[in-house]
Image 1: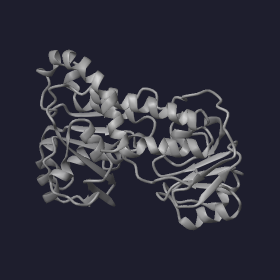
Image 2: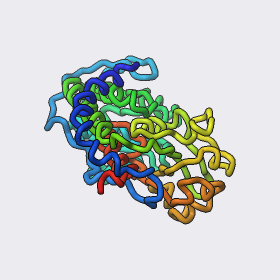
Image 3: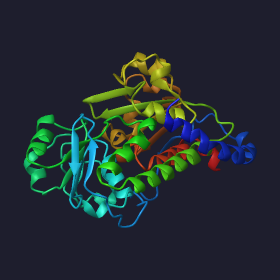
Length: 339
């Protein structure tokens, strides 16, 4: 069992004890999780909450970058973050250094949307555009590239720190710690890890005690070009498991993180609920367009129109707001519990 999961279990036990009594009164009223139609999992405030105000970094900070290179950071006054999920910018803001961010990725939140987007195509970097921002440190990972651009930035003298590109529940705490260490605020990183783990534990404890264990299919769509069903390792499977559900792709026997959608794969996965990013749903014409995909209409979720969508920049970010993501998904997945 990972260090992160042991921490969560430790934090979760007292909450389960309290909710075990409170949950009994509503558990009998929980339905199957199907037949409730399309709904959006919403987080009221999408901006990260700083764990500290105006922290004073302890610099220089020398860290081992995820690519194995030792990097020394001497100045964090102009930070650029570049990763597909936007997790790094979320973490910088949550550590209290949001005012130092001068460039961010496509995935964003309201407080960062005014900043230059260094990945305008979603994952492609432009060295000249980043150099024009005069960054004192670049935080990135291999989800964006090409690698030659990141190497060019490093060769120009800019400290470039790579972090683990994996985004799962097990990487939340190490990811925060890595960013905090690189920016010289390890104490704030420890405080943020504690707050995040407590929120994840609270969200997990809020799942109805008598929940129906729905089978949930995560679909990644981009119009007519990309139609994928998530499987083991997609990231969504970890969220679904934490929410008390079963990942449909795993149930169907998929071995890859993502598999092209076919009628056979969808029918075999037999989801009670379809989980999808908001823009993915919009790209196929909403719930009606989703129902027209191969095999979807033949699934329990398709017959009931049971669809849960969530903002693209939040769903698989696995950053400091993971607890808020889980809480919002729990409310959407078990709407009867809120009645």
